[in-house]
Length: 206
Image (cartoon, rainbow, N blue to C red; front, top):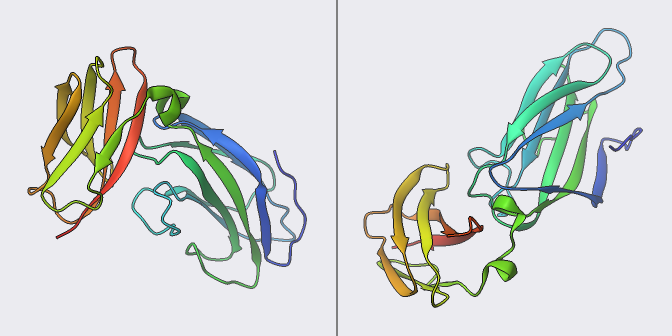
């Protein structure tokens, strides 16, 4: 919980952080003091793919307007293809009309926070084992190396979270043909037989 006053329109609270896990659902509770009759527009974004932009599909996680005084709770689900590591969450409240992620406005406030994205089941790459994918970016064939003796379930996701491929692989090096994929950002989710999961990001270029 963070209680703030007036920050002259912007508050940098990136020193404060929260832990989230891919595939999990969370509640976010917000409130603002309203003087007189006003409609406040709330939006929250999380930079799931860590590219420095909040404009990507699925990164606007909360959006509503309200004229009441008091706490209001919204629910959002972290996509399974969210990258692990630290990223930014932006909370924006604007008076009178809806806003965009980087908009400047005279009445309201924008606050930035840090999110520690722990991945599915909060398992890090270090705990999962040495997995590498290359080349990255890739144009035709993506190679992935798995620890010997490990049976894995593999899924390929688009940036919007759609499953494009799903298959099993036991060990060693395997090759994925990406010629059928349009240029862009994709994610490979790897699950071992114990249910431990991690996500790797790769880029298809031509």
